[in-house]
Amino acid sequence: MLLTDKFGRPITDLRISITDHCNYKCVYCRTGNEGALYGDLPFSDYLRMARIFAALGIKKVRLTGGEPLLRRGVVDFVRELSMLRSADGEPLELALTTNGHLLAETARPLKNAGLDRVTVSMDAVDPVRFARITRVPNGYDNVLAGIRAAKRAGLDPVKVNCVLLRGFNEDQIIPFGMFAREEGVVLRFIEFMPLEEDRVWSPAVVVALDEILERMAEYRPLVEIPHQRSETARRYRFDDGIGEIGIIAPVSHPFCGHCSRVRITSDGKIRTCLFSVWDHDLHAQMRRGASDAALEDFIRGVILHKEERHHIGEPDFVPASRTMVHIGG
Ligand code: SAM
Image 1 (cartoon, rainbow, N blue to C red):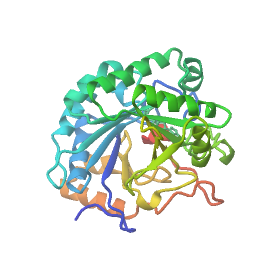
Image 2: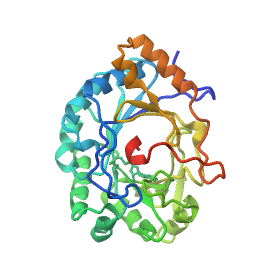
Image 3: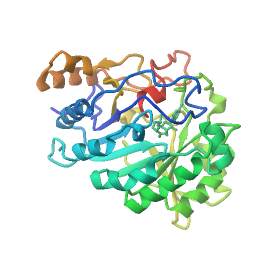
Image 4: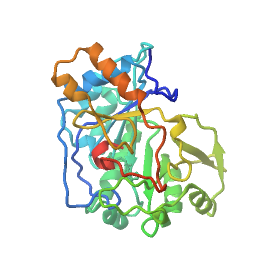
């Protein structure tokens, strides 16, 4: 029996945070004062978890963090993941989300090890603004070099994620549209969610899907292209066919009904929703010597109780028990 929750959603997409450390302190994500809060596990433990999840129906594994490229041994870990097979006997689809700071030197080895795709987070296409957002000087050039190296290495399509905050970087919408066309990357705008360390979120700060589309249309018209139901992004192409942008709109257009994701935190806890108020200690089961079959039962039981939806913006909203950087986005 493959993994399905009690609402009938098949769970096919696993995200593993391999470190709680990050070398950027993005203003919408971190306070800038706190470092890692949670530990991490030997790669062999994540590998065992991934193997068991794959046997239960996971088809896609995304490595994240913290910043996953800070973790030494990540290339070898990707190589080991590439040898796993899904329940259908197929190789897993392997992806990585990174801030791109260390990608220029790792893109080719990652591709050679079996990584299929990479998503790079980048919230401004101007070096000064980029430094203000990340609180790191001179990061922009590294990230741009990382994006280009990923393209050359064939980690296609390279996706660039941008979180927009009103009053901070919403003037970057059109420059990002130009960037997508010039660099040949798929751009994804993500609506800001209340998952930050500093509790600065309010509905007024969110730049929502409709507004992004309106702004971009001032530059060039966009045409919507079909997307799969379980895909998080609504996808658009510019009218001349050059350049794709996507909008991930969990706040204004929630897609929880089609959610296929489950996450493992760096310290080995399962989270069934970004907004979970508790997590489930898979690693504790492993430490106690649980067999693969016992771990499968544990995972099935956890998935069954996956949350139906998030409650962002509702009076009964309860903040998640961890912020984004400590979950793994
Ligand atoms: N360090 C890696 C990176 O920068 O991509 C991986 C971890 S980071 C937490 C994953 C993604 O979450 C990034 O694209 C980041 O922009 C996004 N993110 C962080 N906080 C967010 C929030 N409150 N709302 C929406 N996206 C957020």
